Length: 254
Image 1 (cartoon, rainbow, N blue to C red):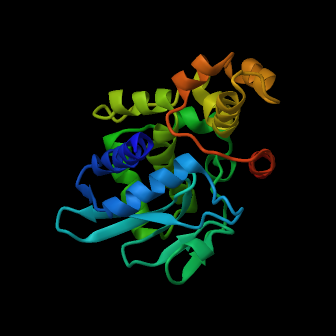
Image 2: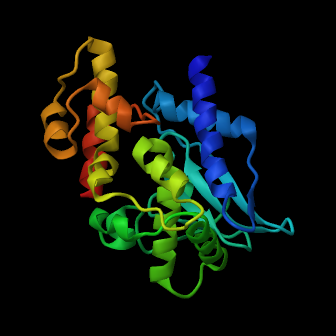
């Protein structure tokens, strides 16, 4: 029960961040949001099947019109795609089966390499109320400048997802919301890159009673994570991936 409450609060925080965008309101099914958060904490189904559930988050303007919507995967809160103001869906490659109805495939993936040329460029993205509203307006039209669309999706990814996964990113977004110039700090890029690896070691440490799995040294060298206490100070939302899933995920994003 405690885990369910914590999970629900994290998705509620996700909705809160998006709702702060000027002139936009977020509507979502609370039961679906709670289920998605619980799935995110618990990982993929025990039978090994794919966690195909998504949470649909409409972006609604002050007149009650849906301008756009995000499709967020339940198992790790990653973006599967979005819909524009007409309700037409656009899917990242390999994610079309997760979206309701027909969708247009996007000509790029959902990694930061695809969206902004690499993780190293993440600190160049301004974050906060203004950028959130701008990103929503770009998704609303979903036509024209492909580079603007990529940047808008990267902006939404950081504020709607990384801010939930990682405490330092969430703190930066909250503190810089009104100024609209919050940034992901360069020293936090390793947390973004290794989030699921940190989760893997955390879950393993709880199971075995000690820190020191196959990625412990990598995390010490690349992210300054020296033990469970350091990991807990960084990670807010956990994903439970198997070793194989972790390796595949990093191979795809490399």
